[in-house]
Amino acid sequence: MTWGEDKQLVARALASPDTAAFGELVRRHQSHVRNFLRKLAGDYTLADDLAQECFMHAWDKLHTYSGKGTFIGWLLKVAYTTFLQSKRKSRRYAEILEQVGHVSVAEERMSTPASEDIGDLDRFLAVLNEEERAIMVMSYALGMSHREISESLGMPAGTVKSVIHRAKQRIRTSFDIKDHQHG
Image (cartoon, rainbow, N blue to C red; front, side):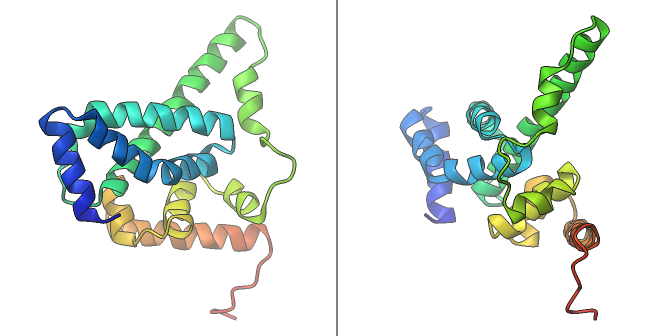
């Protein structure tokens, strides 16, 4: 799977519109998108729903992909936006329920992990804010470069580096991990 092949598939998908070409893009990248959203949401079912929503948004917005960065980078930006929109919707839903005197099921689901058996990575990610979590997952779980993350999220590469540094510090502090580089 190469960057050039993705660009050709995008061009084919836009020209026709060719749903088979877009289907191939989904097949190539769905595991990355799902894993990214699972780490952000902490809930597999919600992440799978968000991944489907992400691909629907991606199909609708495919014409906005300029081809300058990688397609997966662009797609993860769509996934991150989908995740943030979902959080906003669930907060609004929770506020409405609270106003009418109901306990927020959505809020409870978001505050408790999907499984009691949480791995170290998930425990580490839990102490980070959404932006830090997204960037750390892109960098370490998906192996994206700072430049790719920068392009995906539309932020300067220096900011990406700063967020990674800050996130590492927060993890070290939260779990009393010694920094081997700095003593």
